[in-house]
Image (cartoon, helix red, strand yellow):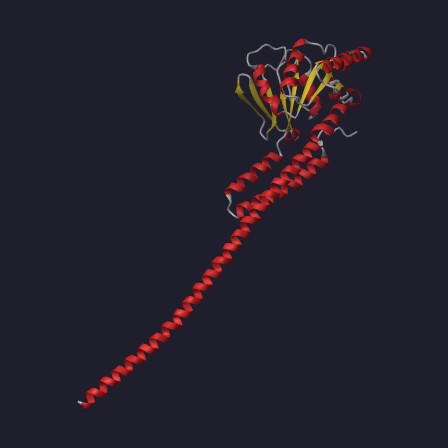
Length: 324
């Protein structure tokens, strides 16, 4: 069963688009147009900007395990511990050299050499019930630019007040794409899980979500290879159909190609203008050349006449001298 969360069709199309834009960039360098070259370079870099997933939930809801299971790289990208580990915002990004950069006391960037992170950047937030100055302020900086917000609840208790208060802020001010995850479903029997799914569904509807997307998962099962029991297939299919493989991303490629086409039109116009200028310069040079040739012939004729006149005058003087 294919559980990829990145559309292969999209990757192929994006690769072809990148090659086209690269050739356009080479053309801007050849014509030495720095402004267009910078524009095309920016366009190309934006083509490969990763999707941003923001993971939100309370401490000990299983966010870190969820991230590890979703990305399924074979190693713990997010540290997992019985004690709360995420006391800062962690932005997890792709990097050839693995490193951690402390941006400030509330934010650190973790660079991991895993190919999936070229496509998806993950923001692992502190628990919504963690009271640390500025945590919420910094978390809010990522919400506006996110492609998907994943609210992770303990399957045993999806009703905690702090999580729903944070949801109110996100939904009220930003109206971003949100899904709900009941994590650690393996710790709950089927009947209680259904009760909590219904409770979460009703709560989300009361909060203004008409059709809440709810997924019950077990990161433990997924990481142990029990994919048919983990519930992650549904999460990945949602992401593939609505985020990474949705029409909006193909629209992004179309928009990039439209922009590239506009730039190509500008280059064509500039080349046509240069061609016209060249033809005008060539015509001007031809006119000058013809004028110079005409003047040269005229000058030769004038010199011949002058010489003939001088010779005649000389002969006349000689005759006069002979008579005397």
